[in-house]
Image 1: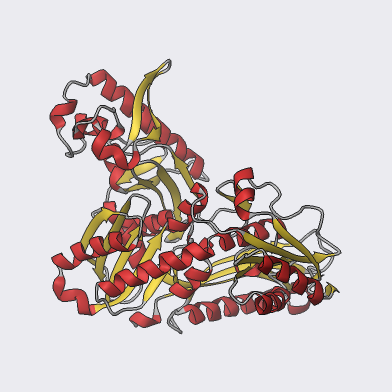
Image 2: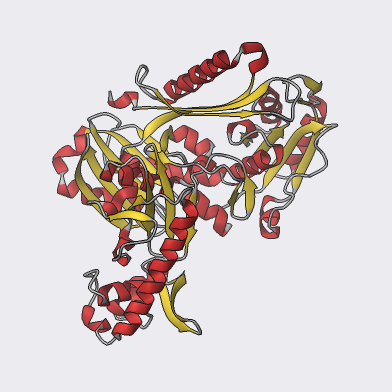
Length: 521
């Protein structure tokens, strides 16, 4: 838990903006408003609702934590993306698979295929196999500048081990392209070159948009006359500064479901559970482990592009409050398509003509929204059949996200949690905590600060214990540098991956450290 001061948590989703005011472990006020195109006014509306309920606390707010899915939504929808100059520093190696290989055609068109292969790089041991070709890099940067490109992605072989190569390349490029926003791959991905490079390019396409969105969020808080530092939620459920989020928007891509999982943990007090965040269009199901979302070990796909940066292990299915209910050859089915934010116009309970999951929930007596009289004509058989299908889909998804057959608690959060009314196979109990509808904002408000290490260590030379201690210290230092309170940082994850295909004693060690915000101490 981060501090005992007043904290404002905000989650900016694709449809709704949720807000919560907390003091210590106490939820003082909550609000929900529609997300707006400019982001700012939606945030202002939600927070003003909070302040109307508790106006005396405005001056007491010590920190603002914001989670947003604006960036991943933009990439998936191909909106507001910038063309990118892609520099791969690797020749004479790593030229077999070119940048953007495997990308969807429409995204390749957006990124622009501005690819520059440059000499230089290091081996997995950290030893150079070729010096950085600064002349070639400078010439490539001049060509990119002539094309009017303002977004840049730089990648190099084994950059997490030798980040100085990319950093040196960035200095050369920045000198030629002073207005460019540069992403170096060692800041956003793991060891694998292609997946790490993909993550860097995705981040670069979002660079211009991120400045606008983060700027809008900062303006909103300023307009509300809240004088407190602003932090942004990242994919692992911890916080980064607005400066970091603006430079690396890709780190926030899964903040929405992550905040919901963290919020579920806080609201229930559970450390291990399955969490289902049910919205208007989809249900995101994740696994809560030691109070944090379990992270996926497989490659991640964002908008059809494979990456290897850290993401929570979340399964999304097409079940939500706006999901269409229809009768087919195999009986009544729910989803996967949805009316989404148009539920208030198209759902039967709101005077529309489309049968949705929310209509079924109201007819079944599970929820009190809209006008129940408008669904009174639905036969009991139809309601039961739709509920059977809906619960079966949720059960199948839970079975996929679990790693054993041991029953676990299921925590329901999100506005669509009204859809679940029965016990579910594979669960020991179904919980709907207070404030579940704004669990994502709660997750943002309670977020800690993290530091990470993910690189190769020479265990043969250092020894295993010394290597692990070094990794722990580096992760702890990274957390403190990011804003965690020194002396209160804890190690929450250590993973060792021996590189058995290598002749040396190299071991990949991943360590995550977390701690409360120093600003709230």
